[in-house]
Amino acid sequence: MSVGRAEPPAHPARPDRPVLRPPKEMPRRRNFGSPAGRIALVHALAHIELNAIDLAWDIIARFAAEDLARAFFNDWVAVAAEEAEHLALLADRLADLGARYGDLPAHDGLWEAATVTADDLLGRLAVVPLVLEARGLDVTPEMAARVERAGDAPTAAILHRIYRDEIGHVAVGLRWFDRLCRARGLVPEEVFHDRVRRCFKGDLKPPFNHAARDAAGFPPHYYEPLAGGLG
Ligand SMILES: [Fe+2]
Ligand SMILES: [Fe+2]
Image 1 (cartoon, rainbow, N blue to C red):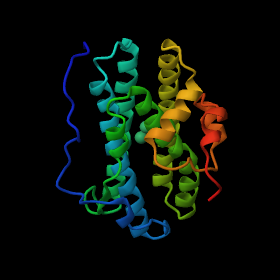
Image 2 (cartoon, protein in one colour):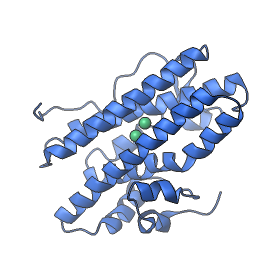
Image 3 (cartoon, protein in one colour):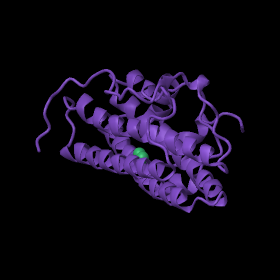
Image 4 (cartoon, rainbow, N blue to C red):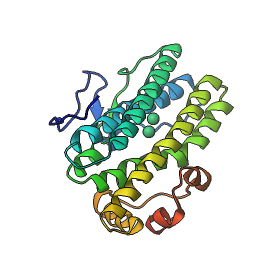
């Protein structure tokens, strides 16, 4: 397929449900031991994956006019396909648990990163794969372990699968971020610090999963200087 030109919408289409709520009104999901707690967790993750599908296609559509290698678009199509698989796995798991996507309210803040970086490809790469998806690498192993301890092996297996794929998404993000910075004569880690400070609210949250970040080729000197205090 050739890469065409289109004006992507400011916001992706959304089903009538879930009802979207401001982040601070979202119930906390702490108790993975109860069936309701696990449904809430899987529902929240399904919502994140739906946004991840849209973010991958948005980067393709929104930056198609820039002079990018075809491999750039191929990489994000592959990411979008994996995000769709993640959503499908979670939606099937919700059905096993007697629920479906849309049953609970969901967080309406996930598109903000896209809006803030709509005119800035380096900002988009810094915030979406290298802050948000990398954060997923930090929190997913503990989440999988807790779900497993609660006796829910199928959900834990989905989390492990997502975790493996997301290492690849961070790697894709970093590869293009570095390549585009160097092509513009910029120092990647300096641009990363600048864009995260301008486009992302708050500090990065340690502890970082160095093993997973290293596996994605993402070195600590990019993210450590942006870390806030513990907790
Ligand atoms: Fe995903
Ligand atoms: Fe991803």
